Length: 121
Image (cartoon, rainbow, N blue to C red; front, side, top):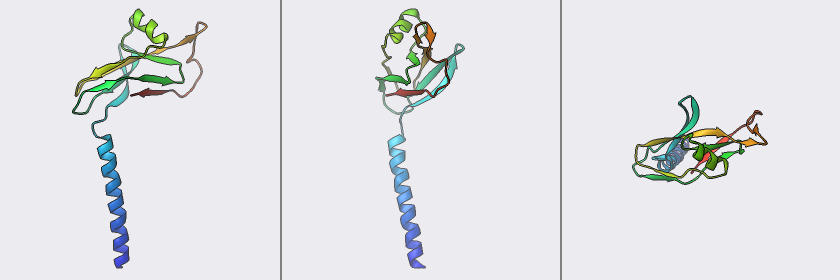
């Protein structure tokens, strides 16, 4: 019976240690979510941490969309040419990046069903 209690104690010790590692790793990390602003889809990045963060890379795989800070013609042209937004977020601040389609030979690349991943670092 004593061995059984020891095994249960070891199991709970490992589980609480793994939870502690996950909690320390994930605590304060920014979050990203899908949102709609001005009837356009966007990715909202929220800094939930206690420090300022720098967003230095925003990428979409496969490249059927690109992310842009606004829908101004100049910004859209820069985004379509491959320039990615970079910015700073203060603590408890959020920012929306609009999702804009890419074109190839005047045809939108997103016309076929496919999985799309947005990666922000």
